Image: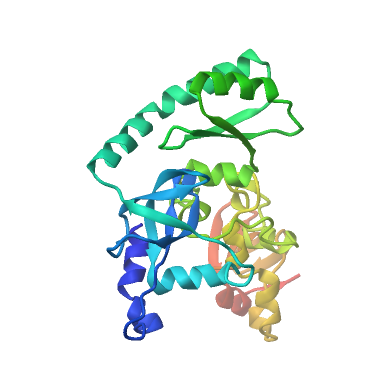
Length: 309
C-alpha cells in the first residue's frame, strides 16, 4: 500500500494532468485474499489510497481497501485488456463508516472460528482436499471456501452441511498452488513480500519456458530453492532476470565468456577447480585442490590471470 501511495504522489509527473472538467471515476480495490478488481466510484467524494469502502458484490455487498485511483487505475485497466473486452465494473457504494468498520473487525475476528468449522466438516465427510482460505462476505449472505486438490472432489454433501451451518450461499473454489501462495500474503526467501501478493497484476502461469538458463544463473549448483518459490513452482521474479545465455549473446569479446563449472584451471597458487559461476555478479569461485580453500574472483581478473586446460 505504501508503494501505491508513492506511485500516486508522482502520478501527474508520469501521466500529466487530466483535462479541465474531466474526472476519472475508475478505481482499483483490494478485497480479502489479496484479490483486486476495478470499480466505479459512485460516491460524491474522491477516494484516497488505503481508504476502506463498501462495494457491490454478486447481488450483495462486501468491503475492500482502495489500492489505486485516477489515471494509474485506468492504466492498469488497459494493461489487463479490460477496455477491449467490455469488462463491466461494479460500483463503490460508499466509504466505510464507523458501523461498517465495527462489522469488518467483527468479521475478521470470526475468521478462525469459520475456518475451524469448515475443517471439522471436511473431516466429517472424509474429503481429500486441502482447505486454504475461507471468506464470509460482510453481508453474511455468501461464504467462499478456497481449496486445493489433485483430483475431482464430490463436495455436494459438504455444501449442504455448510449452508445449514452458516445460513448462507456456499461457493467452493478450487485454486492452484500459485494462488494459494498469493493468498498467504507472506514473505519470500528474498525477505520481501511475495511479488504475487504485493505488486504483480497477474500471476504467471509459467514465468519461463526454458528452465536450464535460469539454473545456470542460480549459481550452477542445481539447488531447487534458488529457482523455486513457496508455491513449489518457478519463481515469478525469474521472468525479469537476465540469463547467462543472453549475457553471452550480447557480447562477442573473450572477456565476456564464463568458464564451465567443474573445469580445471592452473593458477600461480596451484591447480584449482571452478566451483560455481555467479553470472549476475560476474564472479568465479575457485576451489584449490591442495587445501580445499575457496576463492572468489571477478570475471575480468579470472580471464586475465588464468588459462583453461
